[in-house]
Structure formats: C-alpha cells, structure tokens
Length: 331
Ligand code: GA4
Image 1 (cartoon, rainbow, N blue to C red):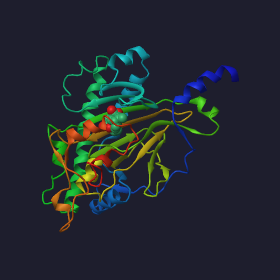
Image 2: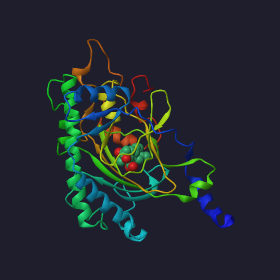
Image 3: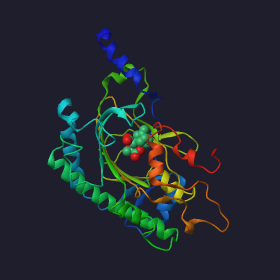
Image 4: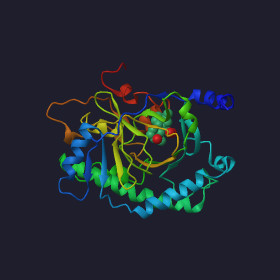
C-alpha cells in the first residue's frame, strides 16, 4: 500500500507546502454594515489589515447556496466536460495552473470577466445556463456590496463625492472579474509529514476591492504587518473584503493591499467565490487629491489600470507587483 501511494506523493512535489497553520485567528475586524460605526470601522480595518469580515451585508443566503450548489455540480462534471471551458486565457476553466507564468496550486477554477457577460458561448462553451445566470445575479449583488463599502470609505475620508471610488467599479467599462474556486480534498496530504499543501499561493489582488464568500471549509490565510500568517475562520454566512493594490495606491499607502493565500484541506472541499472590482482600462491609478495632506507626495509613479494589468500578467503570483511602480524604484 505504501509503495502504491508513492507516485501520488511524488506528483505533489510540484506544489508548494508550508508549515501547519497556527490556531484560527480571532483578530479579524467584523463590520456590521447596518451599524452607525461601520464607516469608521471599515477605514480602520483597511489601514490595519487591509481585510475585514462583513455581516448584515444584505446578500441572501439563498443566493449563496444556489450558486454554491451549481458550482459544486460543475466541478463534479467529468474532466473533459470541464475542459471544454478551458484553458483559461485568462478567462475560462483552469486546473492547477494559475496565470500564464508557471504558478501552480491545488485548485481548479472558473474565471469570468464581468464585462461582456452576455455571451458565454465564446469563452465557456461547457458552462450550464443555470450557472451562468446565477453568476450574473451574484456578481451584481456583491458589486453593490463593494460599492457600498467604497462609498463608506469615500464618506469617512471626506473625498468630496460619495462615488469617488465606487464609480470606478459601477462604470460599465469597469474591468472587474469573478472567480469560482474549488480546492479538492487531498487525502495524500497526511503523507507530507505534517506539512500543508498550498491551494492558491500567496499574492495580493491587483484590483481595487475584492469580496469573498466561501463554504464552511477554512484554508484562507492572511499575512499580518509583522509578516506572520494567520488563518481566517470560515463563515459561510459572511463576506470577507480585502483591499487591492489599486486602492493601496489611491490611498497613497494608507490602506494595505493584504497578502493572502489558501491552504488545501486533507478531507474537506473548499469552494469560494470572489468578485474583484477593478477600474476601466484607461483609468489612471494615482492617489486621490482629497486624501493627500498638504505637501504630501505620491509614493507611486502614475499608471493606468491597463498598464498595471499588463505588468501583472507578466509577473509570478507571489511577486510584489507594486514595487515596479514605487517612486523609489529604478526607472
Ligand atoms: C490574483 C487575483 C485574481 O484571482 C486574478 C489573478 C490572475 C489570474 O489568475 O489570472 C493572476 C493573479 C490574480 C495576479 C498575477 C497574475 C494574474 C495570475 C497571475 C499570475 C484573476 C487577478 O486579477 O490577478
């Protein structure tokens, strides 16, 4: 038996591992969207961690469950059926390969663009109509949540107009995307002498804001300011929000684009759904004048979202993509 399982363990050698996660972290800020303090708490969390949990967000549990069930149904299809919607370029079905530059993870996924969402046939010939409709319904619900959060930030930071940030992802030219991830259980993990398998390697999100929901399987970890990794408790009723690189720039470094990763579980499947709210391709990404103190200089060279995205797709997942755009970086 031991001999038979050896090739599987060898196959796992291509995936990164890490030390077992520490105890579940209890310090994730929780923001109740219906509470009068919400704005201040959102801003505080964006500065401290770049990450928080949202409750009373208004997205129905029914929609969560319906989309999750359809996603599970899709990921259970025979491999060749799923591959009709792949390989991802960057949109479509992907299995273990992440991005175009050699990153791998113990994950399969569907990556959707949220623009041109009317014609699935070109990119997703294998996608069931029910799944397609639910993705569209879900995306518009979480986009609203993302906008609400960005409006709270604009209000709290006195940006002048409430929609200074939210207009970027509300815009019909907004270059946003949506991801359904499935991290299959990996029973062979137990043979890895207590190490953990990386499902999705450490990275920051390039966009403005990401809104995540998962089933009740943990695995997500975030990196704190001191460089330590902590596990985020799973909560299938809540949404988690993280600051992306673009919002870090727009706040001139006040907000933190949080580094995060996902570990695979040996016994349970993890299913997550993430909306990445990004600006239109020609939008300039630079600190908003309203957040700058008198005489404060931008920490970053000015760039458009299209330039940043191009550069991101040349990078490896774990690279510090913003470092190329820091003022101190070589020209
Ligand atoms: C990370 C955030 C989103 O999942 C994503 C990812 C994208 C992809 O999977 O195609 C990238 C990654 C993400 C950043 C660097 C590049 C691009 C894979 C990769 C190696 C959809 C995104 O927008 O950027």
